[in-house]
Image (cartoon, rainbow, N blue to C red; front, top):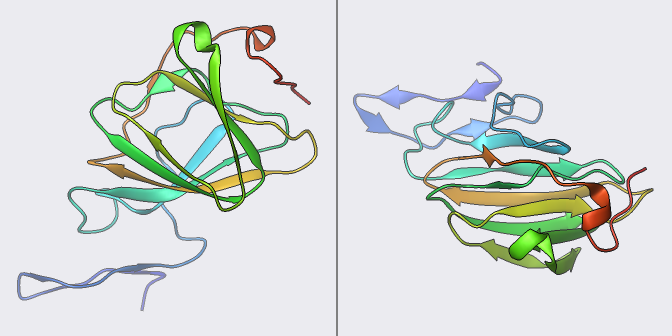
Length: 149
């Protein structure tokens, strides 16, 4: 049996398990936000969902980006995150362990780890796929309260 269990039995789609360490790592990336997928069109029979883990090392952030037509939902597993959005990324929402977040389609934003000592890890679901459209970067000093390691 392979690390990635994916079988199609007589044209019937069956459940798929992606084993720890066998996640799909060739995903859309955005600077210091590292995305790996457990469920995606690239390695499961999924056709309308991307589900994975996003992490930011201490003091790291994503580039400004949006997710095209995709609706995005996230759940913070551990750490202290902030999502900057709005004109010049002047608005923001803080998140911590146990918080949920929704990001609408086409909304430019920056995902930041606000801790300089602890990793930020969250689970993310996106429909229909992991669309990542990177935008022009901004200087760290324009992001209120953000500090790079």
